[in-house]
Length: 418
Ligand code: EPZ
Image 1 (tube, rainbow, N blue to C red):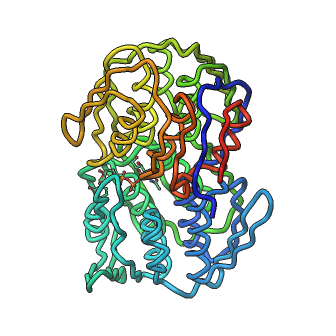
Image 2 (cartoon, rainbow, N blue to C red):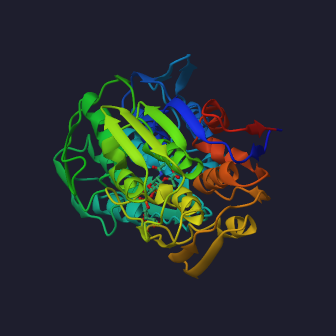
């Protein structure tokens, strides 16, 4: 079974790539489609394992799925099951996004408490407390959670944290709940905005998406639509950081400069040249870059936690010292041991803070992907390390990246997938 990237380091990157559609927009949109007893076409879905898993989950709920070359047809007319397959939901946390849509459609839902993952405990207290505020009865029986929404009602919800998943679940549930529901301290991520655009196209009345306060006026019913989700800002960020690390000049098509503002700011600060025009970003780097001094992740529009691991790899080979602070998740420095094994100079201060002193170069090693974005970060380290690096457990990277090795090889990298 294919499982590792064998990467020959040292090549600069030149050329152009088209960025895939967003994993974190496509998954909640697929989940939300079950609200309507109708047919949907989702165009250009990313060819990644998380989307395949979501299709399997929808199919087990009774959806009829047709996969064509450039779209997926989802027919939710005869959905007949409200229990999410627990084995599948274990492999993918984003199955939690189905909860709001299932409760909307069936007024009942049963889920197995989604496991945490390597980057953190990933609790769902904000989801559960929000549903309770909306009048949903929640019962726990062993590892199963039972939800009963027969007596639900609109509510004013204030989230303790601008949780993406909790914001999306509330919106999916409340969009056909008679009356006005508001979410304060809502998540502002572009993927939340894309979900709201999708639901509004279906006939929902959702206002304020992208701001801290979202207002939802419940409508009677929603209809099936054709939709193309937004481009993946984390994949675009990964390619930009790869270019900064290796040196060269890369043009990213089907990108969104506005959604990567913070990253572009930092890459310009350290010495990259970046031009943006509509949905095109062109980045060039002579790999003679200096440290940005501080990297602090936060909720959108701050620097995204999902790019922190790749940025850490870059900081390992920049001139100077960088302090990296991860404020969103409690265990997202999983690549540190592997980077040190490759010659990086990193000191972990605590679970939210590390200090990196740039080194002249990294050297090749055999390392293992620990999580989706950590795996991508180790691949970027292999691109610049002297010698041949082996990154194993690539199935984690395939959860969110559509043939990352093909994209990088098209730019001049030398990666064998075996
Ligand atoms: C989404 O996860 C993304 N996943 C994550 O991307 C992303 O890192 C995260 O948002 C933050 O931007 C998808 O969209 C599929 P959260 P989500 O709820 O919704 C705490 C990737 O690599 N929290 O915004 O699960 C939580 O522990 C993935 O593509 C609670 O305390 O994230 C975390 O510290 C990784 N209680 C913080 O909030 C809750 O009930 C942000 O989590 C929910 C969350």
